Length: 275
Image (cartoon, rainbow, N blue to C red; front, side, top):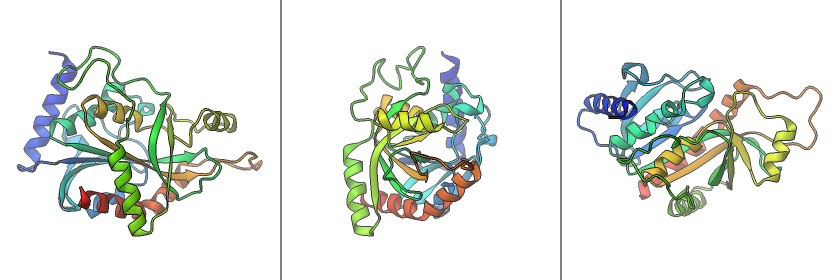
């Protein structure tokens, strides 16, 4: 057996032991500064990543590094309070391992969130952007021997983000008075922030926001036939001209994401209630 499969199976079995028979039907990945959504999960079981042998540990700012399993919106969910990034030095197999573990635990849908820099000039700090498509500038996590038990060698990516879930988000947002943007997410390796020329390039090729995560997780979920909903919190605004003293700062990104977390929590919770 492929040793990567053995690792996935071993961690999945260990996590299931900790869940006391709970069967999560929906997975949630919480990005930078967005881990507070986990505080809305009722009757939680918290499993730190470090307690799962072979599981990578998140080192990024604003990522606590826990699985949280409990009830949200009347459904049993498993949330990642902090994700794994390629820029942390992990191979892509480790970056997407948590998604495969959640699939092994039985999830039927995946919600992914992130903090992203707006490349669309109409976007503002604190906006929520539904991800309708993406442009991948990260290594593809499916490179290498195919995991036939998870999905086909050449999975379709025509609709990486589920149209029905997007429609539901728009409906819920209208009911709750939450303004939403829609756009294309560009995923790069990081960890350096993008240059002004790169921002302009991403905008030119059709990108509305840029970040350092999410897409590998989506690819692996779609490989396994799991419907995905993606949402970004815009934490930086694009400019055609930058002030001489302008800087991107990681702490500022987390602060901006935290400020929008309550809106995102309300949106996702209401969506789950209606599923």
